[in-house]
Structures are given as C-alpha cells and as structure tokens.
Image (cartoon, rainbow, N blue to C red; front, side, top):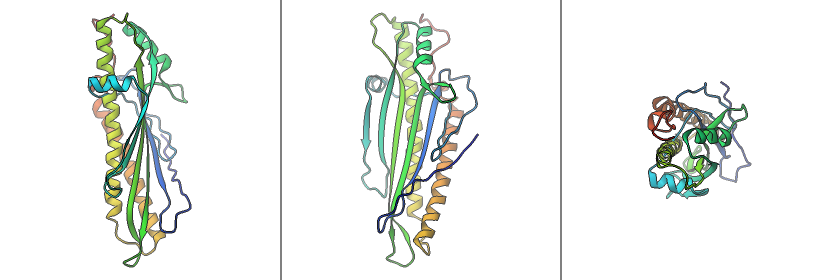
Length: 254
C-alpha cells in the first residue's frame, strides 16, 4: 500500500494563504462479497477501496437516468464547505441476471491495474483561508473549503423485454449501490466540516508561514482520518454487500 500527499500551492493573494487540496476515490468491485486487497494511489491522497452503494427508489431512478452536476453552496464559507456533486453513468444491457453481471464486468469502471468496479466515488477537498494580523501574530480568517464529488455507477438501458423479477432485482441493487456511494460522499463532506472548525480554532502563530505549516499538518491529519473512516465504513458494510449493493447469486429472476 503506497500513500503520498500532494498539496497544490499557488502564489497567494496579498492576504490569502496558498490553496491546499486532497484528492481521493472509492471504487466498488463487481462482486461485493469477494474483495481483493485495497489498492491505494494518491495525487493528494487517492484511495481505492472496494465498495458498492445506493439511495431511495425514486432517487435511484432519477440518478440512473441522468448525468448531471449538483452544487450545494455553503451559507457561510467559514461554517460549511461548498459541495459540488457530479453524477455519471455507464450503460448496462441485459434481460437476465447473468447478462447484467456480464454487462457490469464489460462496461464497469476499469482501473489501471485491470480491476473492474461497479461504481466509483471520487472526491477533491480543497481549502484556503485569509490571514488575520490584526491582533499580533497571524491567525486564520475566513477558512473556505470546497468538496468536489463525482459518482459513477451503472444504468440499465430500458428494455421492455426485461422480466419483472430481473427489473426488481436490478432496482434493489442500484438503490443500495447509490445509497452506499452517497454515504462515502457524506463522509468526505463531514471531514471537510470538521477541518473548517478545527482550522478556525487554531491559535495565532508567530508568522503566517508558521500558520501555513500548522494548517498543512492539520489538513494532512484530517485527510488521513478521512481515508481511515472510508475504510472503516466499507469494513462495517462489507463494501455495501450488507446493504444490498450486490446482484443476487440466486433469485427467482432468470
């Protein structure tokens, strides 16, 4: 398992600290119960974790039919991150469970090592802040965070010949798959919220360079914990399988 960190630094504005960023992703294997060890690759810290996910039926139907982006602006930068969500789908064809499994394997999210996943949730957490030098030393002012989340998952192409039991099995699977992925999204957003509170509470540093180092250490610690939280969630849910994010091995569906 290899981990590395990469923080983006731009030339700061006169009173603004350099931009810092963490990037990660969570991917779901085709068969949720039987998993290979987690592979990890990072561009700020990128995590590949075996997973599978889902929301409610109406929500699943809506998401499965569209590729779109949702933006949730924070009411106040200093109290909540801005969340930008993008949903992307790939097509799956089939009228039986074996055909659907084959479609997931053929069209699923393919990683560089050849592994194929049912779904992929990736996130970028970026943050920046201004300096407050008004009371001596240098402290954090107006800490701002943005969480970009992209979820890619399968979409069953409409076919009137799909038997009702197969359609029901697919809907249940997809609903659970998206719910699980949404939970991974929520974990990332919660980590950004905690980072905002912790960074805002930092004591003033002697210099702004010292403050930057303190915020970087804090950010690294929070993002490391985020990775552990994602792993723990997958362990507790068996990568979504315990939540129904797996097509049944045996079913009344053909």
